[in-house]
Image (cartoon, rainbow, N blue to C red):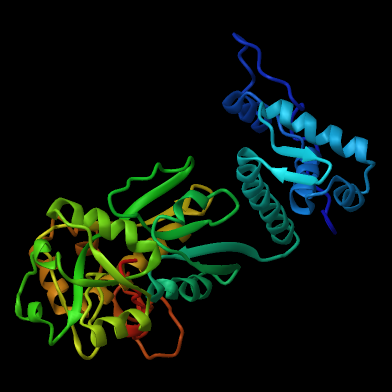
Length: 383
């Protein structure tokens, strides 16, 4: 790896834990062997990485500054350890096998984690990587930086169901996450999760649509409608419509402004989170199918408790204010205090000037949070 040496041999290469042996799991390397039955050699992984990217042992050997026999030996040793063939070799070149393609994705992540670790330990500031699935809640980043000046927070926006697996794996320290509909992903080790809300999924449609006059839209009424959805939401939409006995006619793929234009101009319909305030020319209506997405805050146990509590409370307060912009959703929250217990226990946020700054209100009541006005353009479909 250019510029930085890898961590070297982390565990004895290819040493399978014998049956009946009780390894010392008090050490990280021993614990890893106990879980997987194999050790890991960093240089063998990098040898595979080079061949997989170059698709040539000659070019990979030059890149690694190894002889071809040494490079080939490392790759074969890795294959023996894993018990799978990673590459298909021929006179015409190299082709990745299916296990090889999967391993390459993990090696990319490991390299990314290593470079980030190097950058982190070389700076005097404490780095913290955050992600949200709701764009409007990205304000937690600047709020965290102002509340804890020694932190250097970084941010990414993620789609539902994609952030949680990376908490504590070199990806994120904490996330405002959202589960995909009809899925309950496992919680990673050493990660703590706290609920923000279980948010309903509602219907966005043009105000001149024939169904716009109904207070609640039945799902079976949408069997003949044209839909516009974000590509990552298609499976969720199909899953929602299945109990009503139809497959949705998804005619348009889009998000953000493209989604809104499709709804307004084509009289299509779309699923949106209940917190979305409908733009001009559109309305949002509840569905008779009570489908809700779990919104949560997740942090690795290494995140100091003071920081985790601040971010959790800030996100809950910001989400509550976001939700209350939609009168229909506010009415539902107030009518179901038990189902929105986390929000009910969160103090009302205090709205400050739109300066881009966020701070704890030292002069006001304890626990109130200053947040700026929230833009309407953040909603992009079901996610």
